[in-house]
Length: 379
Ligand SMILES: Cc1ncc(COP(=O)(O)O)c(C=O)c1O
Image 1 (tube, rainbow, N blue to C red):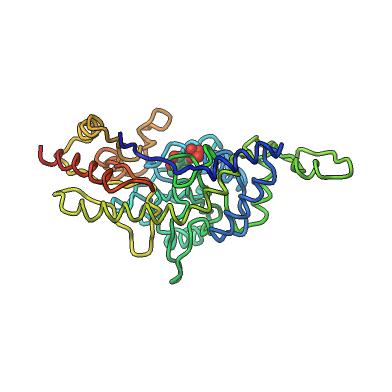
Image 2: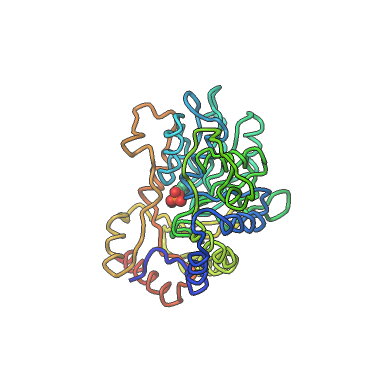
């Protein structure tokens, strides 16, 4: 069986988790603080705040910006449903705009026409690790005075060229960037998330919100020689990461450059081998973007039925996934009044196919995927 993804976890991660357990401090503590420092340094962000997953990161991002009832947030329908849910759960309205067919990312040209007096923020998704056009998006956000939040769930290790320099996603280019460490991502802590920002006030709000709005962290109370009475300053949440997860995350972070390099090699291999499959569209990086290749997404030619191709590949032991879901087609978001044309999003969901990619993929694995696809094209 060739799975769609395999995390690379080894003795280093197991030893780190064991050490965290044996330290006696397993909830949010020194390992989380160290993971935050190391993540911030790696991506070039002034502040990084660890949380329980990317869904809660997005929720906190909106809450910290005081986005709520009556506000509109522009985003893509073509994303994992958490992107839309965090807006709805905050009491705001998600306004969906279409994607560019080449990158599967928000189309900046369509964004301006979606802005209304109620628009407070844009959530731009770096879908499947492919960076969005942040140069265009930051300019628009600035022009209209709205916040840009990056849903970087899939984008740890991706890079973008800004003013001639290559920078990691998370630097952050918008106000806030949110990451996921789910096992389907390039690095994992089992479940986990991170917010980065350049804004010290926002970072303080994240820390309050993730910890019940509590005025002092547990570590400060624990270490203090004097009695401290805490206060609960805002209605917060329990969105904390554990020290066991953070200890694993620190080891994963050390592997990140190597993991991305290996994925890029697999993607380059696929690019070459799939180039002459008639009618198959392979993914392409804009010249200003370097994907971490969290996923490798091909567009099937119209004559091939997506579900049948997926079933035939599964019968041969090869797992695939259909194109990224569209939230506007799911019950909470189905509406006869979608404001904007979402045709490219629907085409991508119905005709795209995610094929296996992971750092440890062997030449033989790639060959098996290729042979299975070749058989579909020969049918
Ligand atoms: C684009 C996007 N946003 C948000 C999430 C939610 O991440 P998590 O599972 O860490 O909550 C995902 C997860 O797949 C995602 O792909």
